[in-house]
Amino acid sequence: MQQAASSPERVSVAIGLCVVMLAALPRYIAGGYETRQTLIVIALALVAFVAAVQWRLLTVDARQRLPKLFKRLLVMLLLGTVLMGLWHVLFTDWISWQVFISHGATLGVLLHALSLGWTDKRQG
Image (tube, rainbow, N blue to C red; front, side, top):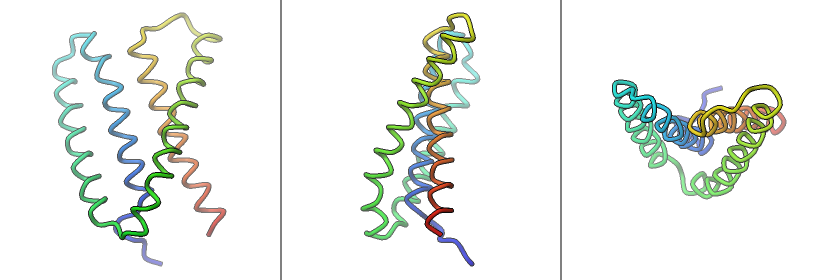
């Protein structure tokens, strides 16, 4: 079985990766890591470009599924932030807000990607 070259799920995960990279930028700005900042910005531009190309390859029906997937991504980002907040309150000393939002966004996108896989398995 051959998989489609583009899917709305791939686009939503790519946008989620862009969010994670944007959330990581304040960490590197605060730490003075200019080289890492530059690499993140380059990676962000590449992933955003690929997401735009993937979006253009989508059919009209597939594009209509994107708003629902973006809402799901937003919910997962919020859930990831809440779970990371609880984790850091219960098990660690306070970290900077830059690290906190980076961890929350990363967990949120991971939850989003995993939930897409579980949904596909149940529907298939």
